[in-house]
Each structure stands twice: as C-alpha cells, then as structure tokens.
Length: 249
Image (cartoon, rainbow, N blue to C red):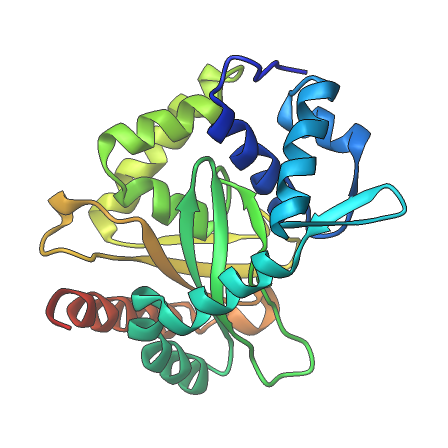
C-alpha cells in the first residue's frame, strides 16, 4: 500500500470521497485503507468530517456516499453542459444504429461514463453511468488518451504503466495511429464479446486544443460484424455534432 500521508488535508478528504465514489457499493474501512493509502487514524478523521457534512453515510461498519453526494450528482445531471450538448446526438446515434451509446471522460487514470443511452435489444452492451475502468484498454480509453493534451497523456500513462514500460510504448504507437484516423476501435478488450468505436469531442476549435471527452458506440461483436463502417461513420458524425455544439453553444 502506498502512503498518501504527505498530501494536504483537503486532498485527504478528496481521496476518501473518490474511493467511495469509485467503489460502486458500500465499502469497509480495511478496503478504504487499501485504496486511499491513509493511516487508519487519519482515515477515521476524514470519515468523521464527511459524515458531519452529510457526504458519507455509515451502515454496519461500511461506508457509502451520503445524501449531500446525491444532491451533487443530481446537480451534475441537470447542469452539465457537456451532457446537455451531447444528449440529442447520442439518442440519434442510438436510434440509427440500434446500439448503446455512452459519453465518457478521463478522470485521473480512469475512464468514467457520465451519460448512457441503452440499446433496445434484449442483448445489449452497456457501460453503466458512473462506472469507471482503467485508462488503458478499449476504444473509450484509447480515444481519450489519443486526443488529450500531451502533458495529460504522459501523466495518465505514467500512472497506468508505472511498471510496464514495454506495454506503454506499444500503446503509444497505437495511439499515434488512432490520432491519424480520428477514432479508436476495439473488440473484447474490456468486456468479452463487446465491440466498440469511440471518437473524441473537442470543446474548443482544433485538435491542438486537446479533448477530455469521447462518445462511444458499443455492440455485441456478433451484431457489429459487417456493420463496422456504418457504426464508425455514425459515431464520427455524432462526435462532430457535439463538438460543434460545445464550441458555438
């Protein structure tokens, strides 16, 4: 376990909140200790503070985001400019393709889904809203990495590939190809049997501005076969529509 005792008091609180948000369910103290790297006494101080303010709730020794965190989440849903700018294009892409469409962003060394439009098929692929996976494999991660600023990309790769320089070099070569073609495609890299294509959303004009968000279409590999070009073209159109909306809205 890496110690985070050298971070500031405010950062310790954020470490705990981040750990709770990323776990997806109530978490025990021993697991919080492992995730945050804080000393037990320090962790308990942060939890006590967060409980007083309503950001953390406790049940039988397990901790989860509290009611104030829910208010923040509701506020994000109602006021996020990116989500609002993306919603129409996402629904149109989902309708035209018949598949699921997600809006993803890079948060530290993770891919996080912030909006999802599910396919109407009984067998469908879904990247649950709020779910986070390492910024390493899959179309979403590679699109985000390829088009973010060089500085952010270097920091993210250092986090994810700290002990795997060969893997980092291989991915960097793949990212160069992705930047050239303008999108990323993957098959069964994160979830077995899932095909995906992801394209960047630019909040400012020009690729030089860097991107911190992407739109991803995902489908069962069996349904994607023979429709790859249709799915890629549709995802690229949706990403351009959202980018234009962000830049002129």
